[in-house]
Length: 171
Image 1: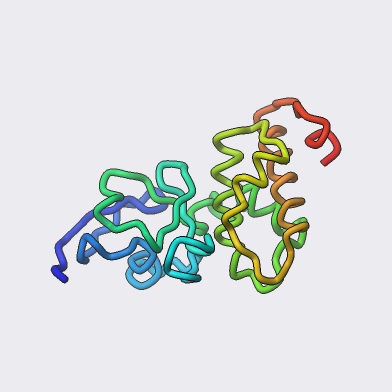
Image 2: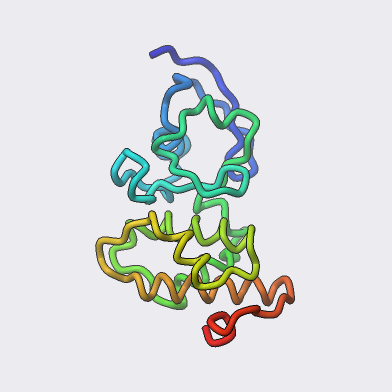
């Protein structure tokens, strides 16, 4: 393992680190940058607890080597909020009481944030697809889905886009 100096862009800030380029991004975020939003769940990219946004797309940080994020923008849960104002997806998850133990929440929120940024008129199928590889062992799936629906409504409201499906109109 050879550590080399590197620059990565996390939450809008250039960060200087010294690490092996093969080091998983998750380890750098948690251990070197003290960003504890992404969680170590399975270490295999299966559970989604470690999800972050890379160039706006939700990815598993436990399987992404540092070398793969050069010249890319990484956003963690901590970077979603604007100052003291929570991101609409974070607000939606709080308002729907979507957490029990909260371990999965980072991944659920990051996947939902990526979805509403990419597809403001996301429907139920889109929501379920975005969240289907994110595991919650506590069983708050119904609250998580309700939070994602609320986040879609918030995104539509912010962009003044009308819901397109009956499910969205009723959510």
